[in-house]
Image (cartoon, rainbow over all chains, first blue to last red; front, side):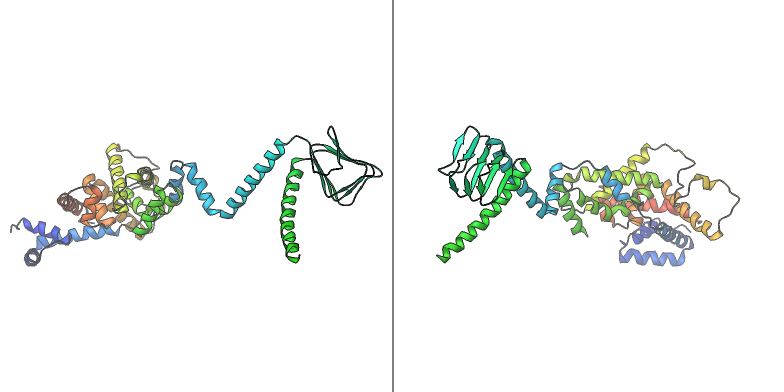
Length: 211
Length: 187
């Protein structure tokens, strides 16, 4: 018996789940009577089942890592941006430090000139600031880029930056004496000063209120 | 899933390479499977699957974000496989993996005194036979069969993936099925 050629087409339509009700009816009717087509249809379904049965395989280990390693290098900008996003606190801290360092170091570089706090009875000779014998200097004395020789008395702290201080036997300082030489000490001095100023602002604010 | 992928792709488009790792992680098995069934060799499959992800990354700007990413990715992978098949000379290496096996090479095909348990042999042989028959299909039938029965894509998705008219996809699937039936009917 010669089967109608469209039967195989109907089978495929069926397998694609696109068969119309009419064709399906025709196919079913034909399959009931035709052993040859039944076998054909059965073989097709078996083939599909076999192909689908091939065990699902997985990508090898480290596949993702290998792909990522092969990607072209991303723009540095993005990497930096991501780092900033992930470390906001560090970013803020380092930004602060950089700005701080910048300003302090530049001020260190710039003023190589002798400068002294303004007290009327300080005597300046070349690179040396002298507190004359018998004189009493009120308030803190700061000498930058020069030496300080104390023959008299300072009522307050004495600070010498980038220089040395000489104390005569009769000299006297009521407060602390400090010498700042290296840049790190200079930095430290700045930080301490900033902190002290801040405290002073608060304290003076309070005393103002008391008044 | 597709929304996560889209989100990651937007990050990749902004230049964030790390976001791509997640995309690879999601699709690696699927892409590897396509390549393996198309090529029938694990080493080559890994090679081409990696290449596919690499191409997708490099060309990510040309991906239309409104479309399905998987379709686009599978298209890259199948095209690379077809290129590889066309270039490939029929060659055999003793240490190359046997199609359809997991980690077996040609050395294992040389008769050995030790016998494997009967069942294992049968199951391995069957898997091997199926893969071998898939590999024997002309590549135009092979790609549609792999996408249809291994990746379980719909006919429309296959048509999009391969950029072929739906009618052509159907014809190729029908012919592919018939060719496979001829080979596998007596299994």
